[in-house]
Amino acid sequence: MEFGLHFASTTFPEKDRSVQFCQEAELAGFSFAVAVEHVVLPTDYESVYPYSPTGKLPVDLITNLPDPLVWMTHVAACTQRLRFMTGVLILPQRNPLVLAKQIATMDYLSGGRIELGIGVGWLREEFEAIGVPFERRGQRTDEYIGALRNLWCNDNASYQGEFVKFKNMSCNPKPDQDPLPIIIGGHSEYAARRAGRLGNGFFPATGWTGDIEPLLDIVRKEAEIVGRDAKLIEITTGLEPENFLESALCLSKKGIHRVVVPSTLFMDDIPGGLQRFANDVINPVKERVG
Image (cartoon, rainbow, N blue to C red; front, side, top):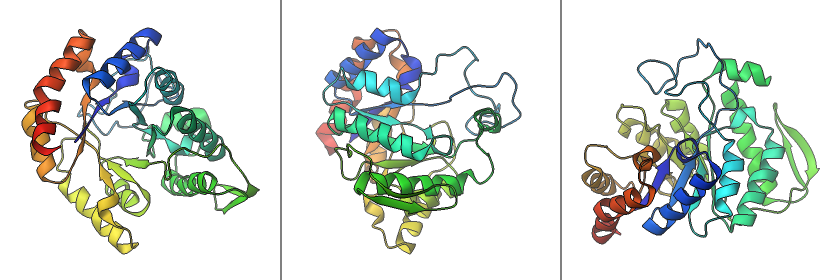
């Protein structure tokens, strides 16, 4: 089972602490760290944050939210094995050709340690400020995924869609990984279907309290419809905070072998907290299930 650290970039946005955290996590046996994204936060917004009963983000406006790609590049340069995942990058807000270059370069320079977790976004006011239409962001996302993969896999690549069009373009370097994982985030049926059709993985929202089994069924059924092997779509989800060890063992029995815990658990004692978690959870789980 792989253990990851969620909200790593916002819990440890500072230059030195972020490096210390990721280096200690690597030593403790964690497999990956997750960076989150918002380009801007409006002072007032009517959009409903879907992962909280209040409908509001659990951060204030002056919370440091580093760009996830810049943060990941910084800590990847200071680690050797730890993988880094956006969880999630709001794909329809990004230019797909520019993003293809950025992600491929990061993966190339890190030796294949980057994972692109993507979502369609929920904050209409942020889209409006950036100048990207909020409507049809799902369709835009699907096209961008296709464009990214085309540029990563081929030279002299072309793509003809409604939202992105290019002809005979090459983008190098190519990612070190083939394929570079694209992980679909979200808790909606649309997200589950997208994961089944297009994702290398599925990351249901960890702050959502619903049952993920119906979503996983949707992933499997959608994969079957398009002729994909659903077993190759890796599921990432959160552990129950009341008992991390039992939660991990339970998820393993269900075929889920990739889990995250909040990085905030380790704010007060980075090396000690990470090592205690390794002793209490990671090592016992690996002894039992690998």
